[in-house]
Image (tube, rainbow, N blue to C red; front, side, top):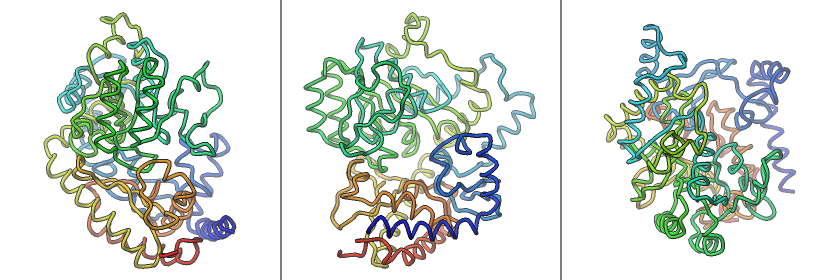
Length: 470
């Protein structure tokens, strides 16, 4: 009965959507004739078809049908200053006008300048750039396996580390929890080389190290898990991870592709008082351009270089350290460092306001929702927010297992129903909301609150078991 009710609600929303976004529908039909599923990133290809962007500025994206869409996805969380911030577009325009910016195939000063910023702000001893978070985490695991001479990779169930072999295990929740292999075509014995543990579960972590510790090359995790629900690691858990990896001779890899430079002008590991062996970065460090990095201990990083015999072929690709990308990253990080108190203080205040207000709006309409993304005793402020639809009051959403298990939360309502209903209000959300940027104003937030209130009224009585008190 629950599924049939949600099917009917989705059909109703999808019907309205096709009337509201006809030009996107036409473009998507053309795109499907030459591209797999009509696009390049599955997450963007939401049903019944995606909205097609035409321009973007600040907090808004304008689509083919002319709607000003208030955006909380902000380039996969990359655009902490909003879309196309003038300080970056101006620098890129000046660079190109000065006959520099496209790929030369040579080295320049920009990569050194950005690398210096990353090392200074994070405590890393060496850094090497690549072009995506997936590549960064892949290279980090390769470095760890070579450095330790071990094969096992430990990760957190529900943690997303990109479309790379060791990241494609334990992402989607199923009958046996986070155990499934996400893809065919993986090399060799990859599935058996990955062990999965529970986020924020210290007892489970101790058990798996007791069983496999002498074979674990690395433990890779996000200090603030992203796709698994925007949940920060408990300080005791992250400190336990550091102690266990050091004791067992494994490397600790913090995947900060999302969290790096999101909470302050540096890495989240610092805020927890932890120096990992390796850290991966992406998103914000590129200033809206394709930049990712692996940074960490010199003795580990240099095995990718001549000094270490090039044991790991982290050699780079044609577009690694692309000049325009290095410029965008340099301008972005310089701005965040120079305006740290202003930027992060405002983002923390906006994030707290939004999370509390959204919970209250739905409660006032008799619907039970719960936000994650709240800070903890270590993270003093957070600009992230995810709206969940728990099946009953009092559920502690502390791990991806709780987020994805239908016994606790209605993931379909968040990912499909709520997202589509909000798009009909010209508000773009992913995973239940997304992230705040400095471009979001109080007027924008009021527009968000009004949209959520209309959606709450629309969903009231339409989601089985979601009336408060049931």
